[in-house]
Amino acid sequence: MKKEETLVWTDTEALSRAAAYFFVKSCKESIEKNGRFAVALSGGSTPKRLYQLLATREFSRNINWKKVMLFWGDERFVPHKSDESNFKRVKEALLDKVKIPKKNIFPVPVKGSPKDCALQYEATLKTTLGNRPCFDLTLLGMGDDGHTASLFPGTDILNEKKLLIKEVWVEEKQTYRISVTYPLINHSNEVMFLVSGKAKAPVIRNIISGKKQNGAYPIQGVQLKKGSTIWLLDEAAIS
Image 1 (cartoon, rainbow, N blue to C red):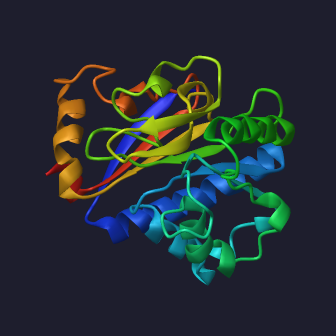
Image 2 (image 1 turned 90 degrees about the horizontal axis):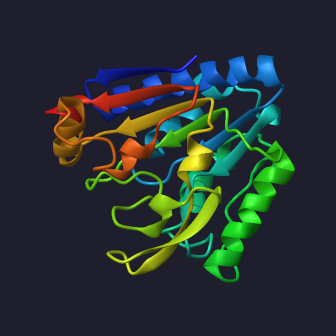
Image 3 (image 1 turned 120 degrees about the horizontal axis):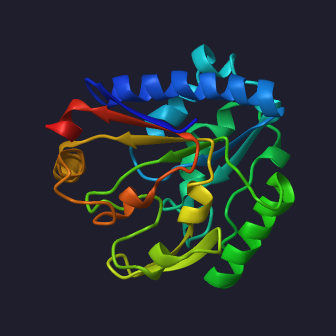
């Protein structure tokens, strides 16, 4: 059943703890229902604390890591050892600290051309999750410009209707990224947005007030067909 809710927390720490509890709950429910928990992880700075919390005994002991499958919603086209790599950030905050089988970790390939790597990752998704891949949980953040994953304003990827993974040139960053597309995000069972910081407030205010209609910001293109959407915000983000 499609539903959406918004929860506001005092600060990033409180938001991150709430996200960790939600992650554990979603994990247990998905494993009971599907026998696995397939997650698309978010890049950016906000989810870092969530990953650190999931690595602690308080949360990790309640997660059956053998049945967790980790994917990435987007990745910068840099080596996995680069400090800019979303994979490296998750590896240091979470993967190095929990007993998750290596075969359950699916980083975005970054060797070759961006287009070939995007096609390769889509093929991996279909091989692993079926021809119509569905994430049990998709974690997403939001940039100051309203982008989510690597769906930036004015980029061609916003109009993609068929491909599930696509390369995208981000002009303001002068680099390629590889990202999930709307067809894949909107097929998720659950989406959890983590949004913190005063810089995000103008976009959140416009979305909530309705001043910016659907499509004004890329994040508004996330419209699940039947799943649940939860927004976790801190007070600064709605200031």
